[in-house]
Every structure is written in structure tokens, then in C-alpha cells.
Image (cartoon, rainbow, N blue to C red):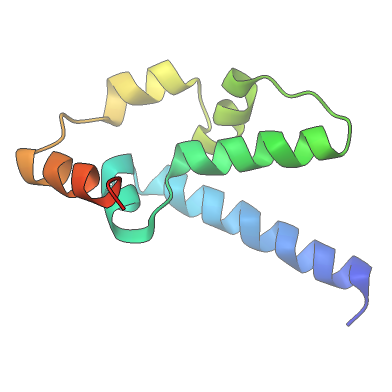
Length: 97
């Protein structure tokens, strides 16, 4: 496989992951963090950092819009729920390592 094809496949996979996360608004970021160690905010930060490595400045709100499909504050208002005590405890425990 050549580099161009690999890059195209990686880009398609990223777009599919982002589309999947946009559809799965029932999955909270804290659930993703507790299970996989990353969330939508991590993806948006990684996107912004990758752009910066290429000399492209993308403000954090725009990077989040790319991942969330809407402004972050709008997504939070529509879909983010208060984390349950057990979710918060698991998150706190995972950050002690």
C-alpha cells in the first residue's frame, strides 16, 4: 500500500469515527474516558495539534465543532448529563496513576 492510499484510508476511518460519535450522543465523554482513556475533546485536541504541526492554526472551539458537529456549548446543553458518582469516582481513580 502506498502512502497516499494509507492516508486516505486513515482519513476515512477518522471521519467514520467522528460520524459515529456524533450519532451516539447517548455516550457521554466521561464514559469514553473511563473506558478508553480518550473522549471527543481529546480527538478535537489531537486534530488541532496535528494541524499545528502542519502550520495550520485551528482554534480550540473550531476543532471541537469539527468533532462534535456543532459548537461545544450547544452539544453540552443538548446531550451532556451530570456524571453519576460512580463515574466521577472511576475518573478520579484513573487520574491518580
